[in-house]
Image 1: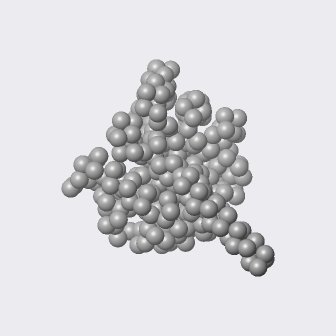
Image 2 (image 1 turned 60 degrees about the vertical axis):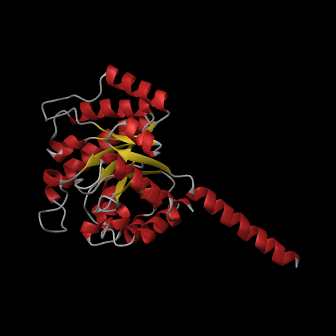
Image 3 (image 1 turned 30 degrees about the horizontal axis):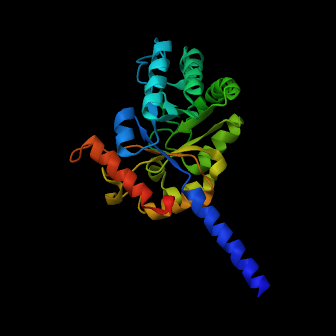
Length: 281
């Protein structure tokens, strides 16, 4: 009897611990205002540093930008979970003559604002694959790895992670991280981007493991994610996130242009969907 009680207590403790852990996620909205995210019930936002328009620009964040953002955060009780640098859709990270100076500015801003990472996108012109294939653009790898390492070493001093968002397979992301070899360079995982590689998110999350994931975009091919056809099964996706041990931010990114619902309706509805899922049970 004593042994049975002991086993029951252990099982109960594990169950309570798991439930508590699942409640520990913070939810963010990508872009948009602090006010709309707050109204919908989010904990914070992912900033989009749209100010830099081209390679000749060095514009990141001014002192006023940072002070204004900190003031808004304090007023609303909101956080900044990450900063995206979308200029790298337009030109190559490793060829940008102002990259190091610009990235240091954004890293400094992220550290001051309490953000955990900088999202560096690799899409369009910056795609890591040769067009129409799953083969690396090999001519990019050596200079790209060298540049990322340089920036990562500065970011490490500020406790900032460089988070690489792309449309390459989980296996190739692991290869790329191994080439870079810096512990503060990880994958910015996106639940819809990964579908384009042929994997569903639950499968890819298991391949990557939580230690290679900096942060997660929850994204789908519908305005209301519970109506989406891709990813195929959000229940499996959310369970894989919980089971992986990842306990960081989960950030809503809209995967289609809004045609039916307002911005407020979309972010509010999807947050309710998240909170009624395995993520918070």
